Image (cartoon, rainbow, N blue to C red):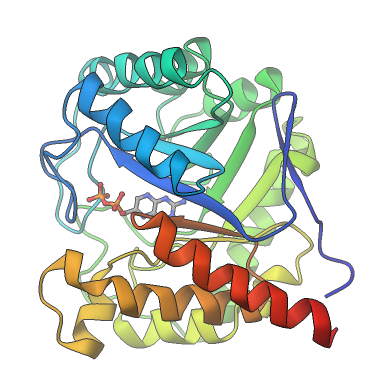
Length: 284
Ligand code: HH2
């Protein structure tokens, strides 16, 4: 554990030590959990202010749903959704650290110009050849996530030999590619991509063995919030009813070395993680 990085950089900011909370603001009509709830810049800003008040360290603004089976939107539409939202958030809270959830360089560039400090790329810089040079040149933070296939197709019978080994190997390769493209390693976070081309069992194995991914030496971000595998275990069909299950996954991930937590319910996860951190502090 001692060798894990204690911070991650994004622009001129440093985040950490863990637990770092990333609050989700989806400026979409169709996200699986909160679609339509923040589909105007004003609503997106209101939600972001609430999440910041609840203790979020980063606000992740997304303009395209990546739920299984979702259709992509155009870069123009994505920019039309995220840029006014980012500007509205920063006009109310100029200190906020904003991340943009996109795999398109045009969208990322527009978001960085509007003041975002981090790019959350579910394709780990494979989706757009211009993304790696953009991120390297901007000096922003970056999340590199594992995904099998695309959101449209990823849940069609995903199979792995050893899911933990495959995800770990993939993330090691993507971190190396990012560093070769000029990205500062202190700005990189890795994410196993819970729910992206994975069965319930794959998700559980990854959570249980997160220490293998944390062992790569980069801060690990996990995104379990309200996801379907939690509902499959608890029986909670509505995503908003999966908060208790989500909190359990966050605490488990923390115990296996996770650094950052991408969540809809910042207060519940933050309080649980603060307790986990207090216990760890006295037992290490
Ligand atoms: N999950 C979602 C979207 N972006 N980014 C990272 N790094 N890790 C994740 O696990 C992750 C992510 C899906 O969740 P959500 O944004 O709530 O829904 P939707 O994609 O339907 O907008």
